[in-house]
Image (cartoon, rainbow, N blue to C red; front, side, top):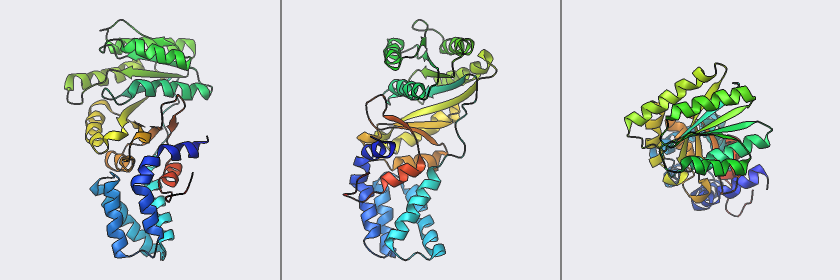
Length: 306
């Protein structure tokens, strides 16, 4: 199954519940004021959030006026382009370091550990040398769980004993990766409740030790969010961004929800790019996010196949 096909399958619940109806709505006839009103309602139902829904409709109105669009089909293409522009990252991930370090943060239950394993698999398939760091030293057996996933992905792990200083684990992992010529270090962290200020401060400490371990390292901090929680994920994310300097999003369980519209509001409200999306349980079901492919797969009409 190709990239677009897999993404389309992962978005099936979202598309079949709302976005397919939006595509049908807009291509059924010429666009009118009533069409705009119904579109706004449908976007809110798709969990884009009211503010983002209004923004999308306003931009569509302007595009229709400015470009003298007449048909619903033309308006749908304009809406796709608006969504694409909204979702495109302003800059690529910072992966130029030696090694490139990816800190993975997020609360328990969002799929953080499995996302780390899938990231390791993805980069290994690209020919990169990957190492994992078991920085979640608080949850019982967290390091053992990560080791199981690492074995499946075929990558080494640096871990300390339970209760050890997470920053020390990651410091050692980055130093080890640098000496062994690894390209990427992916670091697990404890699943933190976003209202625990001391734990958030610890994430900041972890970010600082990376450069102490290796001056040539680059750092990306990816926040894992659960697509099933929809708009609730956004308030959670804002706390992490402020405290931990998150630079991007991994959105998991997109295949298990009809709330895929949250992807749009995450970018619009948080200003952070979605870097990866999870669309299934298999190791190869975490994919680099592509705004163009996402918009195209999202707005397929009912009955159309990817």
